Length: 163
Image (cartoon, rainbow, N blue to C red):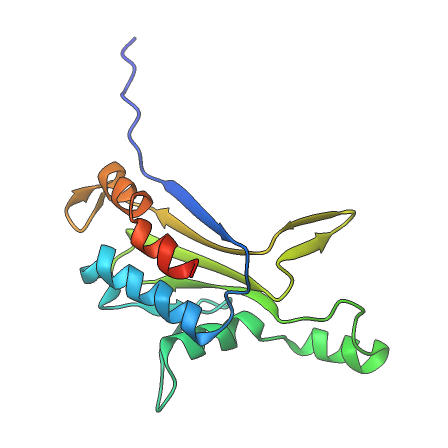
């Protein structure tokens, strides 16, 4: 029996931060980083809504503005619960969004939360992170593992976000 070699088709890297990422400056730094590590992919960057719509900036809005609007959007069920019960005790700005580009090679998930450590049951978990998912064997012609290494070693991104 011949066993096929395992091929990599998916990788996920996550950077956790000790501050709130849901502000324009932080989100713009993330966008700038993506333009530097995957420029072709980033030429078509957009926010993917929870309903699968492609959201792009219009007028004076930036991609960071659109992303933050999507991350913090609440639906009609939430509005009804707020009407009936008032604000929950730990109400805060929190949510997530996905950035997608001109190819399906990368997906970037960003979670933002005003609570640096979010309460989940009886625990607290890091609440602000950027996850880069490599979903193809190659990113802009470069093997996925090499692309992931370039991102991982890009201390410029981590340093810029941590200052």
